[in-house]
Length: 172
Image (cartoon, rainbow, N blue to C red):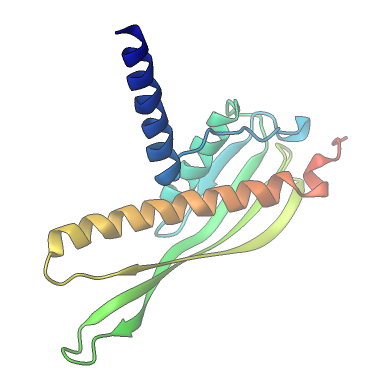
C-alpha cells in the first residue's frame, strides 16, 4: 500500500513539473542592482508610459529595490504601442494577425540630475492572431498581449540599464 502511494506521489509530482515546464514557468532570478542605482525610482510619460514604468517598478521590487526619493531616476519618455496588420484573410478580407510594437526612450539620472545613462531607444514587438468568431476572447487576448509587451519592455530596459558600464561606475 505504501509503495503504491509513493509511486502515485512520484507520478503526480512528475506530471506537475512537466506541466509547469510546458507553460513556460521558471523561477525568478534577481539581477544585482549596483550601488549607484540602489533606491532607483521610475517615472514614465506617453500613452503607455505609466504601464511600462509600473512594469519596470515591479521587476525592480522583485530584485529587492526599494525606491527612495533621493535615489536615481529611470525616466521613460514617449512610451506608446503601435499596431500593424500583418495578415489578412484572402476570402473575407478580415485582418487575422497583428504586430504590436512598444516604442519608448529611457534614460537614467542621479539625484543631482547628472545623466548616468543618456537616452536610449526601445522597440519591443509581439504578434498575435485575431479570431473574429469570439471577439470577447480576442479583447482579453489583446490585454494579455499588451501586458506581456510591457513586461518584455521592462526586462529589456533593466537588462540594458544594469549592463551599462556608465551606471556601474561609482558616482562622485
